[in-house]
Every structure is written in C-alpha cells, then in structure tokens.
Length: 294
Image (cartoon, rainbow, N blue to C red; front, side, top):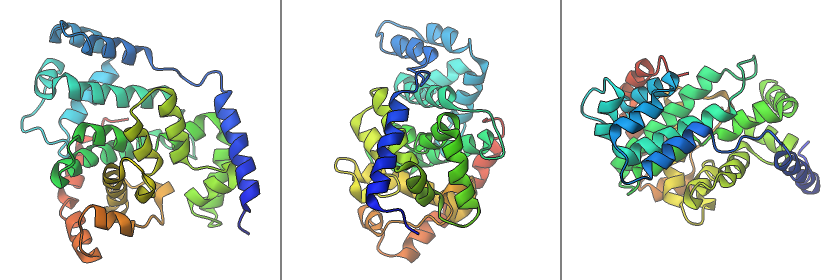
C-alpha cells in the first residue's frame, strides 16, 4: 500500500534530522582544499600542483583515467600528470579533483548491497557522458555537466554509509519487487538519493545550478534554473540503462522524461533512441578505459 503524505513528510523530517546530526559527515576533504587553494592562486605553477596531487597515487590514476576517457574528448593520449594538466588546464582539473575527492570522502566498504567499483563505474560513465553530451548538444559549461553527472548519485553512497539499515530495507524492497528503488527510498526515508546528494553538496557550498541539477536528475522539468543541465544529466543516466553499459540497479525501470525530450530538442522517441545508439561503441570503449577506476 502506498505510504500516505503525512507519513512521508514525517519520515523526511526524521531523515533530515539524522543527516544534520551526523557528526562525522565529512567536511571538504583535505586534498581538495589543498588543490583548490593552489588552483585559485594565480601565481601557482604546474610543478607545484603536480607535487601536491602526486601524494595520492590513487588520485593520479583517476585523473589520468578520466583524461583518457573516450567520452571526455581529449584528442591526445595523456601519459603523465604534468601532461594532463597541460592539456586539461586548471579549470578542468579543478572539476575532476572536486568530484573524485567528494566521492572518496563518502564511500563505504563494498558489501552485498552496494559494490563500490560498480558505483564508481556508473558515476564515471555518467559524468564523462554528461560532458560529451554538453558539448554535442550545445550546453555552454561542459565542465559543470561533468561534475553534476559524476555526482548525480552521491546520495546512494551516503545512504549506504550513514543510513545503512534504511538502505538495506530500501534494497530489499526493490530486490523483492515491492517497489522501484526510488519509490522504496521515498517509502523508507521520505526522500530520495537526489535530495540527500543536494543536501551534502549545499553543505559544501557547491554552485546552486549544480545542486539543483542533481536534485532533479530524475525529473528535470522541476528544475527552476537548470532544466537544460538537469536534462543532460537525466539523458546520460538514462543512456547507461538503455545501452546496458555501466547501468545501476537502482535505476531499473527508469523512463525518459517527455519534457526533457523537448528541452533537448528530440522530435520523437525514435530519434532519441537513434541518438543514444550512436554512442554505443564509445560507451563500450569507455568500459575498457575504466578498468582501474575503482
């Protein structure tokens, strides 16, 4: 039976209270602060940025993986961090380091309810696809699309780490066929992973448009200031399901928004499906590039 509105509101209030009172909810990660401070310093040089980032070899590997992604769009193979910074520039590097640092700070250990490698892969595919779609569809800030796409499901891993018993209940409802994953989130917590992601990113003072696009990546028409960006993230997320490449189990049953079809200027479903199919080969290549991305 569908949970009634007053009960949903009460559960939402309870969940928000828990989130506000998690004392170990991570603040901005230290390496993010260090790198951001450097990148905001107009006098900094590439060697200094390289020196700081190189302290974390996992971070270096992830930066190089993203830079070499078939969907990210660089025309030359990136073989080392200095070359990556030269090709990417500080602005793109800032976007990449932001997403990686945020995701690292909230991830939990893999268990039978969430495989962290699969979560990273879905996030990585959605982020790099969002950037490519932003370029292809004419959005003027593809870097923002990358960050938003990469962090769109941040709330999933936050639930898994900080609201674990609730997450297990949600997972079981979805696995047993009682409800779709997002429906189960609302039933158990009174809000969805989109809302939780928005909560955390607002806490970290991320841009309003980015937070809004993450909050509305399942329903882009609800976005007041970022419908186009939200629709791009929605499409990238949907593409992983449609192509069954890097698909997330919590997106099973996801449907593409009719309003987003209009916003992205697709005239009908056949045109949309043809557009998506045109990305199949590059998504497949992406899987190979992501083998170390976990």
